[in-house]
Length: 135
Image (cartoon, rainbow, N blue to C red; front, side):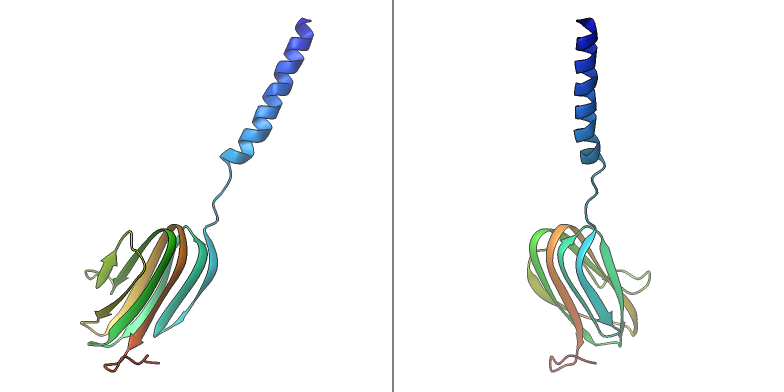
């Protein structure tokens, strides 16, 4: 009788471990989507984003960046910064929106998009004074 009780206890322990260990070590997907860009644009589209995607853009003083952010879930943050300078744009917990920012100096600006359980898209392009994309 005592032996059966120990056997059932061992079986129960094995079952509990078999179920709980995979749940404990389950990893979240970091990024499922597409990311591409060149020196004048950056495009992200994602069904899952739990990471930061960054891209460098070449801007001349006075040029405008035009951004379109679509948030279908989770949280998104965007930072646009030239080197160690103060950010040209910095936003957290962003919702769907369009925005523009103008470069004060010529240089390389890093655009960083951070998502947590995020789903959506982000597009940013350099535009001329007439609102046309600069290639």
